[in-house]
Length: 287
Image (cartoon, rainbow, N blue to C red; front, top):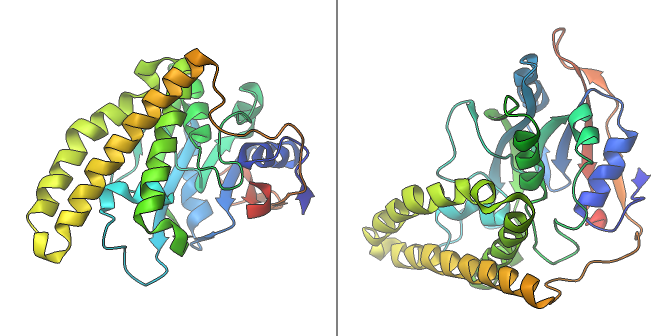
């Protein structure tokens, strides 16, 4: 157990873990995610390519009532921190990884200054995109650097009941829009919104059409969820953009570290050919 020595929040907690880690690869696992036995082995395999700077795994949801909420289509599973319909189904290069199941070269994390403590979740404020920001910085710093999605590196991510209703869907989407406005300001909208543009044009319309074809089985609610999520994210993006220009504070950011902790795994050689990896599991108290 290592106390968070940086600003309260998930980014600060992860940075504390990176400073303590000794493996050449640093893997991250949330405290509400359970890794498959071969998760780490699959996660580090792509690092055999020296151009690979980061790898993300698949996060399957564990719902509180066995099945996905009636209102949530698979295109929106990102809202609860899980892999969603639209991601690749085989190992592929991507823009960014999902935070609950990811790994970076430690050298990359150090060189880029770690996770930005001004972004990311703090307590119950569902801001995000700290791993997205870091992955974009990876690409911007080195055009040959690769970020890889490996869907065979699987974790089961527990979803709490409070994240399965309309209120959280709209709130999370709104703050996603704010987060993307912040990224656009810092990194440029072309990089910050490239994946979102493709997702909105290519993935979401198909989901709406599919769900409208199953109205009797809750499809109307799921189609409405896609539309409402998109509207909330757009409103959040506008709010984030206008808030910056007006000097409005969009979300509270604690100025001092608060008691929180991490669990850092002992560096271990996963396979004879793989680099040593340290596993960092962030606790909810660190957020």
